[in-house]
Amino acid sequence: MSASVVIVDDHHLFRAGVRAELDGLVDVRGDAATVEDAVRLVLDAEPDVVLLDVQMPGGGGVEVIRQVALRRPAQRFLALSVSDAPEDVIAVIRAGARGYVTKTISGAELADAVRRIADGDAVFSPRLAGFVLDAFAGGLPAQEVDPQLDQLSPREREVLRHIARGYLYKEIAQRLSISTKTVEAHVSAVLRKLQLSNRHELSRWAVERRLVD
Amino acid sequence: MARMKELRRDPERGVLAGVAAGLAGRAGIDPLIVRVGFIAASFAGGFGFALYLLGWALMPGGDGGRAPVERIAGKRETWLVVAGMMLLALAALLLLREWGIWFSDAIVWPVILAAAGGALIWRQSTASDEPAADRPASTRATPRTAAVSLPRDVMGRAFVGAALVVGGALVFLWLNDALRPARDVLLAVVVVVVALTLILAPWWLRLVRGLTAERTERIRSQERAEVAAHLHDSVLQTLALMQKRVDDPREVAALARRQERELRAWLNGRRAVAGDETVALALEAAAAEVEEAHGVPVEVVAVGDAPLDERALALVAAAREALVNAAKFAPESPVALYAEVDPERIEVFVRDRGPGFDPAAVPDDRRGVRESIVGRMERHGGRAVVHTAPGAGTEVELVMKR
Image (cartoon, rainbow over all chains, first blue to last red; front, side, top):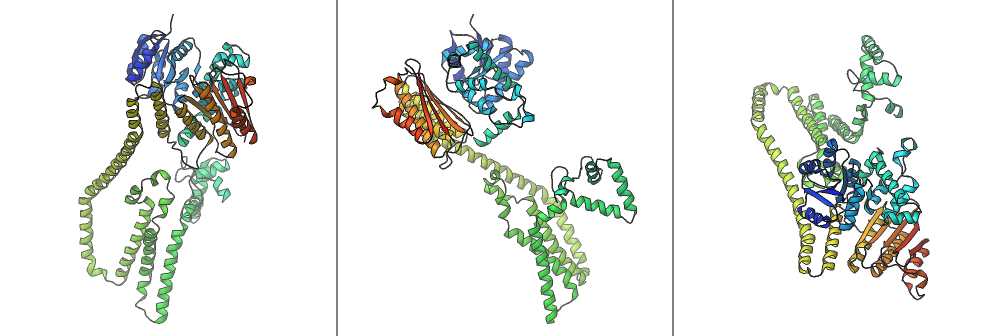
């Protein structure tokens, strides 16, 4: 059984392109161009995965996730974007997306990412890994740190660094002498920290990026 | 003054200005006790009232503001100028009196008042550039805005100055009994002025609003023009080029990627400024160059950043060489560049998914890797390691201490 997917993007050309690339690889159940249509379609079609554009008029991907989550909290999202403004990407992940890939990804890789999200894994592109390392960099006053949420373990950092360097999960597993499942577990743990940590560093970092960029 | 800063008024919980609440909060007692104390002391010859006023003047506001006394002292320069002018006027009058050129004592106060007012107004007009300089850069970017609407406190001071001058003139007239015949005329003038104000105020308001709207529109159209100019210079040109090269997909892809990179940099406002270079920017520039020269996509991920010093320059040069090698020997696969800058060191990884090679089999006369990557890094106190094996791609690891 192949994974089912719905494509949400306000650019017609991109929707058509992604559709053509994914056809035959996964079960494409439809596409939507606006936040409203997307919410309706996702609730109707109940796909395994929603491919979600980060930047859309009317609140963007974050708004779609928020509205769908009210009625279908288990829905899985994969952010797909040309935007690499870190604060936008981090915002979508924190809203609940389980991964982020850039639109330059090939069709086969995208289908693979969809399947992994459908299986409950997290998908980190090199760029997202870089953003996350950036977000968790820098020290905090000791009393403010909840090590369960606000810091990456050395192993998690090592895995993220490998992703940022362009290694695939199975290559990382080989290099670190651990199983692919363990790599996936580390990535999922990082995703959880990213979503749950109220480390104010994350928001401050986003603001600083906006100012610096 | 440091102790005063800890002691703050608490207007939120206060009845009048929050002096009692502030004192009570500092001492850790019920504000009611302090208030009763103030009121009781007020019956003792108004002593409590005076104390309260003093407290208000000296204690800073609860929201981190400054005490009224401090605020006035902050504009010390202006008030010094005003006081100086008054003393000068007084001195001039005394001098005239000494010389026997004397009209009457009635001119003393009017002249001093007028001198103070004049000083305020003149100071305003000569120092009008000064407030513009310490405003934030965002408002300074639109000089026209600054010219049309003066800052509020400048207007306020000019108004006080004008009031002083007019007051001085009136006092002079009044003291010389010149007002009595003029009183009816004055009344008529006041009535006409009030009437005119009532009639003209809406017009004036509309004019001011119209000016603001026009200004906003002008700024907006300037922005639009700038965006249009940029799109024309870059995006439209590239699109035209791409249409001409449709038969060469590789070239088209390279053009598209270059344009994407440029547009992204522009949108992020990261137009590279000479002398303002950083490691991440330099690496991105190197990646863009290699991508353009060899037509191989290079994905750059950078964590952290640092200014570009001599060692970092060497590192970037080595990274560039590694990118060129990757593009040459693995032209069919994308290249990943990962850079991490932390306080102790800079690390750069350049990885391709090409055929890889056997390091032992590289002939000694091939100087590329040995000289321009390993040698360059070692000369600057860093190190370079090449991880590769046939069929496993190549990764060049560069580490430079900071």
